Length: 101
Image (tube, rainbow, N blue to C red):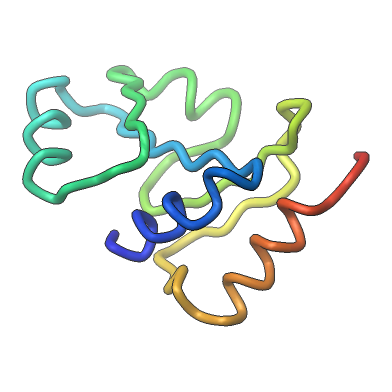
């Protein structure tokens, strides 16, 4: 997930908030994993997986969700991605600079 760390650092001052969500895991395991892997984005924990599954349809990682400024789910990307690629950066820039619904 180094490319997610870079994405978080690059765009955090431009309105993009990157949140990592761990679900169906213990808080101890999540804390240990975050420390070992050096994640810089905030990590949220849904220990039961109920909220992430019910609200956003998360059933298996990795899945990226694009949520607009009003909290609406506007995109979902299933599977790992190379977030440092030019194509990924273009998608994120377009999303960050998008206005309105």
